[in-house]
Every structure is written in C-alpha cells, then in structure tokens.
View 1 (cartoon, rainbow, N blue to C red):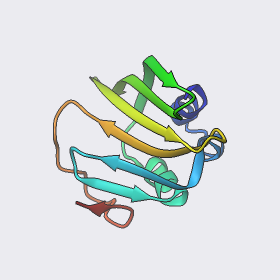
View 2 (view 1 turned 90 degrees about the vertical axis):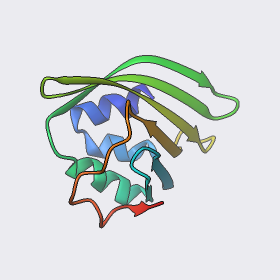
View 3 (view 1 turned 30 degrees about the horizontal axis):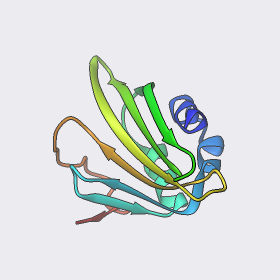
View 4 (view 1 turned 180 degrees about the horizontal axis):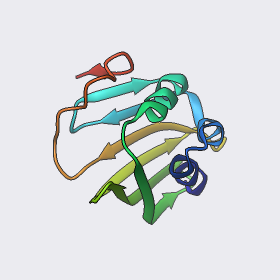
Length: 119
C-alpha cells in the first residue's frame, strides 16, 4: 500500500496504475458509485478536482488473505478528514478491489458520470 498511496499523493500516475489489476473495482458506498477497470479508475484519479493530499496513518494487512486496510488523513485546502480504505489483491501484488469510506455520505461532484455507475 505504501507504493499506491505515495504514487497517488505524488500524482505519479504511471506507478499508481502499476499497482492495479486490469479489472480493479473501486466502490464508494457513501456516493453509491462504482468504477470498473484500471483505465477508468486511473482517469477518475487524474481528473479528480482540487489540490488534495493524503497521508497514511495506519496499515493493517493480512498478506495470506490478500487484504489490507488503511486509515488515512486527507487534506483538501484547509479541510482535513479521515478515511478508511479496504483493499483486496490478486496474489501477484496488484489491487483488485478498493472500497473507500469517508466521514459522511455526500453527493458526488459533477463531471465524473462518464466513469462511474451508480447503485
């Protein structure tokens, strides 16, 4: 997870994409959005608005089960919030599933409808 989060924070999209399986699925339960596939998820991150920063506070991993949980501190401008991300992997070091939980439910920002499905 260190590579994934460091690449995201640095906007190193090549390294970030390298951590993902081709068929990665990203879920945001609070906005009821799902993104399928590496290219769509990469584009979602590249196009995400604002000058956000992410710092990993804690990582809990079960390598045998291919599961990792990260507790994050995310800063967007002057606002700081905590988030929890659950990851599953494919046994080859690539991420196959991500579920992000943010402090409160919210409506997703406009402009990413082309990348997500709502549920």
